[in-house]
Length: 326
Image (tube, rainbow, N blue to C red; front, top):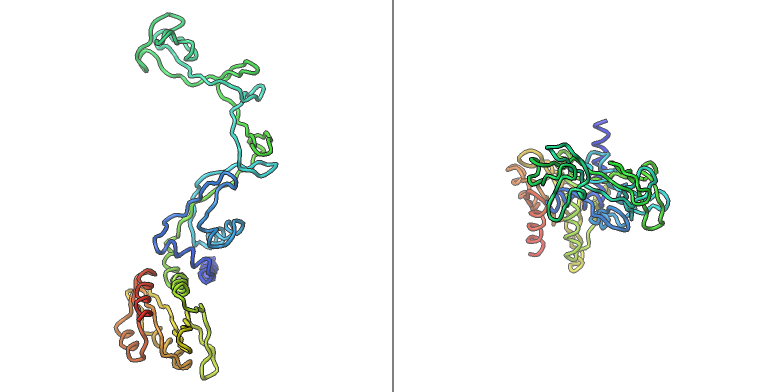
């Protein structure tokens, strides 16, 4: 099961929408995704809508990430929908248990501690004072002379009294009255990035999305992932290929290598060199997260591969900006 979930996560990391969404967590733009209430639509996730393109795709998108254990979630709220028209514009009404009218009056119950008399608060009022209707003693100190003993309700339609009302619902759009039994109730969640997924996502595809977007916004033509055909006839995949239209034929290839250890080994340098040797590309970058090993540095210098060391995507973009603008 764990292998299946990890394989599913790795596939999700290749999806552009997933890359853009997770980059919000990795850049600390958000630490938790909370829904926003809309009086017409219910709860929404505007940030996710902007990424996936429409409201209907948001819930399946978040569910896939949750089921693959990319995201954690916790209950944020529950929302009630009208069973007839599906509206969220619902009024909650406290109703008389006898005639179901919502025209009820709620009063506080007061008990006179000394004589034990109990009645609604209104019957104790005498001018600006509280006076016991039974023994006529003035009540001055709460929890000494008297105490609150709960609430008591009176129905203005059938005139019956009771302590606990029943809950009813009223749809303000289609005017349907419905009970708890008929209500459509949906759980609403807040989402956060799981630590395991954070480590996985930091190493590779999720880093690529903001880099690609930055290069595109800078006016370059970008492909990611991209395939270039070498002299041998083989197609080589690069994480990013940048075409500089202002300089005909100038192409920059970029690969990303990450390590959960202290540094990236020389292996990604060797792999990148093998590809650029076959495709005859001189402009090559290897982004090493968090840094490159000493052997890797030496080999990169030997193979004329430029190294960018960075701890996160912001540092990558800053360094790449300086190098690409030279």
